[in-house]
Length: 166
Image 1 (cartoon, rainbow, N blue to C red):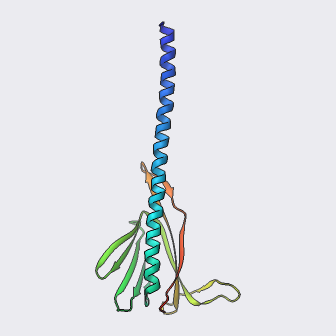
Image 2 (cartoon, rainbow, N blue to C red):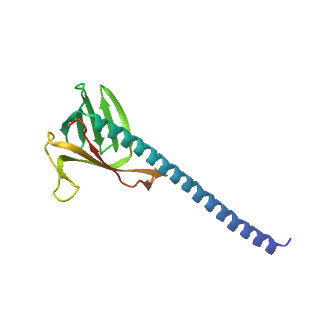
Image 3 (cartoon, rainbow, N blue to C red):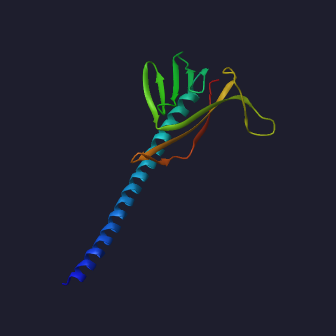
């Protein structure tokens, strides 16, 4: 084997190895991204299911702010949902126990609506009075990172939850 043949073989081998390594890195990042989407979906679905069930069963809304909702239950205990925008998490507190429902939550908003609907449409009427609140609308967006870069953003999760006992 001559020197020229050796250089050509080495060059082709280097190009081939570079292509294979690039493909492996791309595949690894893709698998991590898919795992992140599954994680986002599972955690959002579980949080939404739990929040929906508990708000529906609440006796009423006790307090409302942009970062906290406090509900009263039939047994006069309170159920609190708190959004920490700096820590990017949503927590649930009841009876002294606190549980984190969502992490890496980039934004979370809740809105209050009253019982009556807007004339001619099925849109609820916004209210600022907690005593008139019959419906809570929640929206949030969560994301995950890959190698320090934000790579996955879940589509906006949204739900309108009626307080049934009110």
